[in-house]
Image 1 (cartoon, rainbow, N blue to C red):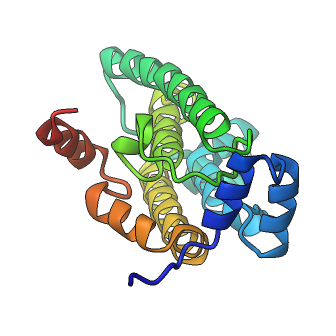
Image 2 (cartoon, rainbow, N blue to C red):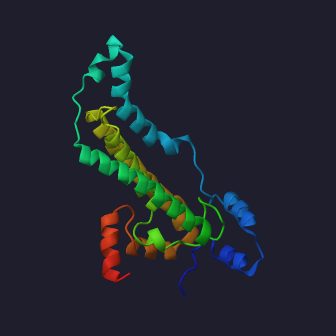
Image 3 (cartoon, rainbow, N blue to C red):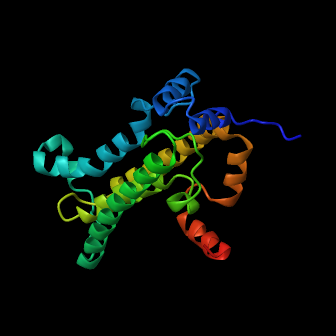
Length: 212
């Protein structure tokens, strides 16, 4: 017999039978360290990204001599067509995130935009396992390009974007190991085999091959 590893299967069944409310389950998840929690460490990548990407602009407009080196860093100039395209991307990012939040709240069983008791494998979760992370990562990178006429896009912007991608990817690894695998066990392992973590191009290709 296959080992039952899921720590939330019983809770999902009790929710379905009406024996527990979503609020009670959220409290249980919190007690079992299975609830989504954010702290300042989760935002380190975004903070570093912001400092690196916007520091040349701060140096330029402050006129402080000590910051002249950063103010004079060579900037990459993007065609207006690229800038307009990134504005469209930012709008799409917001729309997609609204869609992802809808799925979590409507289909996750708990009415929460952060915590679910049902493993979501439909909608945007058919393409990548962490659609919000992919969505906002692309959005933040698009911001650095769309504002490049006002906030110089320098080598620091490139480094900042790389750090953002790296830290966001690392956080998804931690979330899967310390939260998702504990919550859903073998069901999540199978999901990991079927859907990529971050690669939405591969996810779309897999979706096409499955005929969905």
